[in-house]
Length: 342
Length: 131
Image (cartoon, rainbow over all chains, first blue to last red; front, side):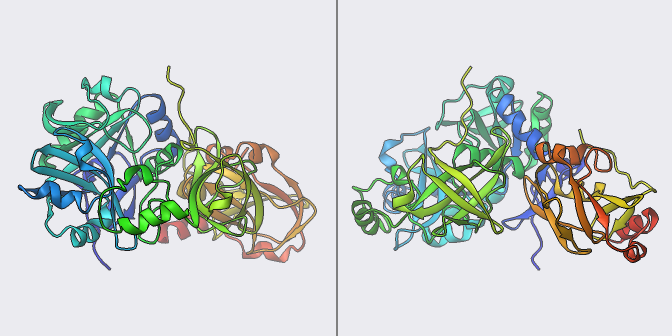
C-alpha cells in the first residue's frame, strides 16, 4: 500500500476536526462540519478549499505555443498573456486524457493546472512539460462574498501575480463551484499563513465533499467519473472546448463524430422521485449514471450520466434503477442549479 | 445541529450500529450515534412497507447521506408495525436526535430468543473502541 501524500495544510485541517479520505493518492479533507453546511456557505457567502493536490505543469520556450496548440483541444490563440482557458488533453481515439486550465503567462510561458490523478498521464502526453506541483499550494476561495472579503478584484479566466493578505500569490478568476471567486497559488511554506488569513476573514473551510456537490449542481464534469479516456468531448458536451478546425491529438475522429453524431451523450438529471443517483446505476436500461449526489440547494437527488443520443434531450423523463427500485428523474439543461443573481 | 455522542443504557445494540428499544410487545429501531456520525448529513430514508416481515441481521431499508448509502440491519426479526414518516420527510432528524425523534420503525418481534444475542450499551461501546 502506497503512503498517502499530505498537503502543507494537513495539520490545519486536522486541528479543525476534518475527516480525511484518500483521493488520487492524497489524504484530503472531505468535510469539517457538514457537507451541506459547507455547500450552503459557498452559495450564500464564501468558502475556502485546499486543492493543493492539483498538479501544476509548466511549458516554456519559443516552441511552447506551437507545442501546446498541437496537443490541447481549445484554441490557444484565443487567450493572451494574463488569460486562462478551459481545455482538454485528448488521445488518438479522441478520448479525454484530462481536462485542465491553461494559463498564458507571457508570450512563451504556459502554466497548466491539471487533475491530481492525471499528472503522470499528462506528462506522458506532454513530455516537454515540467512538473512543478511540489512548488505549489493551491487554495480555491469561492462564493458571492469571496472576492469582497479578500479585497481583490479579478475577472473570470484572467490571472496575475499579486500579494493577497500579505502572501505573494498567483491569483486567477477560476473555480469549480459555479460561483464567483478565485484560486490562489502560493509557495507551500506560505500556505498555512494564507489559510489562517483567509479564515480570519470569516471564510468557511470546505472539504472535497462540498466541492463535489457544488460542481455537480454547476454541471461541471469530474475527470475519472463523467469524462474518461474512453469518452470523447463530443459525447461529454465539451465540443465548445475543442477548436475542431485545428489539428490536435484525435481531432480527425472528433470532427467525424461531430458530423455523424455521437452514440451517447452526457446528460444532467434531477430526481422527481426519492432516491439519489449513484455511479453505475442504469438509466432506462440503456444508459448509466457517472456521478450523483443529494443537491443541498434543490434538496433532491441530482446526477450526470450517459444515454444514447436519441434520449439525450432536456425535459425527457427517465427511470433510474436505484438498487432495484425504479425512480423517475428528469433530464435538465446544465447548470442543474444556478443561484438567482441579487 | 448534530447530537452529542451518547449510547443510552436503556437500549440494546446490534454490532452493525443499530439499536432496539423494547416496549411491551413491540420494539422501536434506529441507528446509533456512531452510525449517523460516520454517514454525515443524512438526506434519505428508504423504509420497509408496514405489514411486511423483517429478519434479524438482514437489511430492512436504507439510509443515505450526501456521500454514501448504508443498509439498515435489523437487530431483531418481526413484523413492521409503523414507519416514522416524520423521518421519511425530514431524514436529517436522524443526525439531530438518533435515539428520540430520529427513530426509524416499530416492529412486533417474532421471538424473544433473539434479544439475548444483542449488546448492552457497555458492550457496544467496547466494540466501538476496538474499531
